[in-house]
Length: 250
Length: 329
Image 1: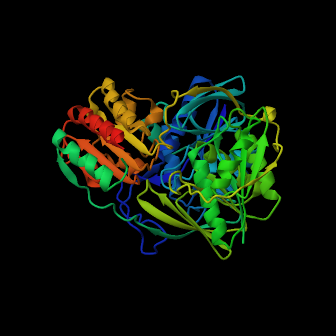
Image 2 (image 1 turned 180 degrees about the vertical axis):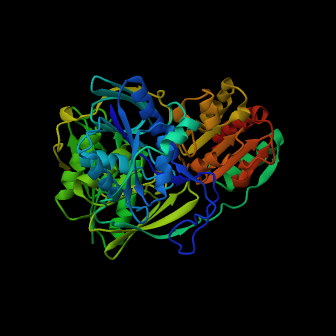
Image 3 (image 1 turned 90 degrees about the vertical axis):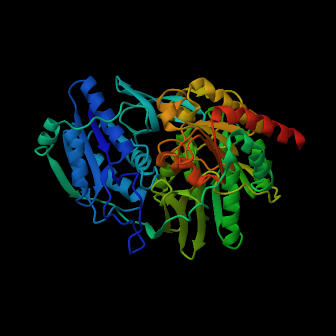
């Protein structure tokens, strides 16, 4: 199968974030960036599908400035065959604009399957995969926790707010990947060496109008500091009293 | 003055909590622009129009009922195309939907169909001249981003529990609309829906959540958390990633950065140390209670009320006390 995996570069989610002096972005100094968690699951799913189903090609695509090349190389070191950077000056916050750039690149690519993470850690917006599917006019399944492909059709499982759903769909398709799959592999030394020689193409991103812009970023107000009200079962009556009289939730 | 189109989400022809939150948020937005109308679209099998009264009470002026025998399960392709068709009829400033599983599926489709911008996971929204200004928590709730949307129409997807449902006592007039696409022509077909458990409250809907971590020591001890949930009556049980990774609880119960993000009225964390990924999924809860044997556990930094102790001892006593408190009312 010919599989595209659209990936995003995001900072380590455990970082402590600061706001840049411009007040319109985070301060990136000292942050560690990598392939976003869900996107790295999508890379793993793509690699396993092609390993299982015989000859195929896996292509990683990322929108963004030149720093995303490092992220694309990481995907190639995991086993992706080649990569495409759709170049922008900065990563736009407008999900539909990013989807337009991806759709323009994917349109003539002849892909059977296009994978995304279900959302990226930084914005958690979950827009780009679904919007790309709509622009391409192909099937779309979001937040899959299982995926099987056979005879030009896919079957996926999705976990949705208390129920699970089994869906069937024809290819070509966009599928966004949730957890539930095998953990993404670590690049081998051989993988890292060969990734340096794999093709990485850079093209301008066709974003169209960018209509969503960051006005400001700020740190959220702190919760009031925590309070320990007591030890063990002896503290239960006081807890119940506070839930009734102060928090008014009982 | 601007009209707002709303998707009123249902499951099995019953409104979900997020539907009332979305209608109430739309009412406030329309009123803030000088009093436009709120049009709420609901889709389901014949009979779903009966939710019109409830939608009117929460601020809808018009309920657009899309009834079709093929809409027993949520059909994202039909709902998106029908909302987009309705939006094209003109006069709308915004399309409000919930940032729920259903809303996540239809929002980007509508935006792409209409070529209008979309912003998601919104906790505040206002109109400022030609722009719409929204706030949305990003970086696992560690940064608040204010976005400016410059377009005459936009899709606005609101975070569940961020906007309170509000009764305003209106009577909505009901219109009917045919689905804009045939449900039998949808590409993605739902073959099976596996229920999580009869009468079980969803984590996104429950006003009270009891969440268990590894401190419960064994899967069977989740019974203690379930007993406490039953004592509250309006509670759901969630879990940490450590617990779902162990297979003690289903993956769908996971609360945290990679699982569900919740903000109930009351969050009771039992045997949870409070890893940063877990806090990302629950720190916007209104009141947080933590019970943990380690007084230095990070969960106590965000807990309004902490008890240091063995959860296996404290839980049964707390459950009994909650039962008595409930009976006393």
